[in-house]
Length: 244
View (cartoon, rainbow, N blue to C red):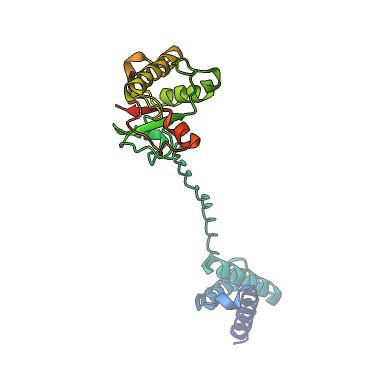
């Protein structure tokens, strides 16, 4: 009887030791059952198989068996969750190309076949001036008196006309001469023809193909202002480039 009580006390000691090793937060029934069985087995092995009769030896066997039983049955700690894959930084969308309309004609440069159209000139879908449009007016082109010889002070105006025509390579124009109302109609007609031809010659000499040009004189028939002042007559003495 005493041996039974002693074995029970030793088993309880093993349970107590195993219980100290357990985590109360994760306690499960098997955390008691396994140490009990392990403690009893440990004490029995010491008493029977190893011939131990000393209570201290049995207690030690019970403790070892209980602890072994606890750890054999105890759940292993869950494996650490893998670290989340790094989130790739969002790639900013490529900026849209900035569309330009350098000559302000309503057609963007990437589709504009005539990129140097003067302001106010109506154009088609390709950005080139429509037929009949006045490409530009060469006001201030001066000639020697009663002659068709272009004076040197008109070169800057004519050079600008050359640049405009080079920027509108697919455009053909009529060079049209005009006079004020002084003098006879027939005389003014001939004078306007000669002056238009002189301007056309200047343009050809400065790199504009003659196949793109024609010339004609309109005399005093199409004034842009009344011929009643010097200022207005100056406006009427002009050469125009009209799209053909």
